Length: 253
Image: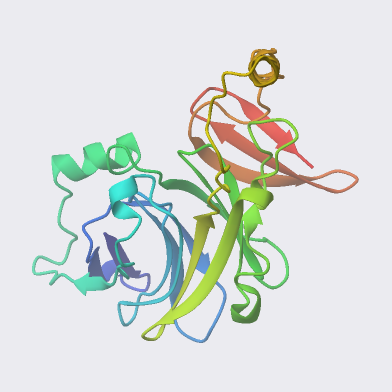
């Protein structure tokens, strides 16, 4: 959950829990809009990042990807909200051991969750970078008119010569008062006709394709495990730095 402190008296002002029960894995203050807002990475199955108004508990924008599990792909998107918890003792309640374990493991089992958020340190906050357990960094535009047009995967594809931008599309819709921006995987076109032919020419074609698939491929430039943190350094130009659970630190330009 989230705890909002009054720094004048160093006491909790409000305490919230996420309506979906998801753990909060990362958080960044948002310098957008007049109210108190924060970007939160939620431990879910689809890389959820929610922009919450922490004074009212409402969700303003939700960024997410398509669920990995096939049975969940047709399910309707559920927008999380913040539910207030009374602070009777003047101090926030302690997290249950199960929630701590969920936080350390990176969210729900089998899901893809964001572990690191990055916002521009200078100037207007026009975009957000999110990296997590699927070893990818995504660029989300914070301009409502450019939500879908300027959303993409920053890191390269694991397969050389294949761009993630060619395989994904993005939609931006209103769900009540909430902007919902979602990444979706485009389905490959199915080939018509039988998958196998007994003719010798077709056999040679299939064998040739199989031999090409068996060629050794170049190693993936991406992390082999979850991205846990990000920052930028300025040399001749800005360079993105990512740190992963695989023990590697990578520099991207």
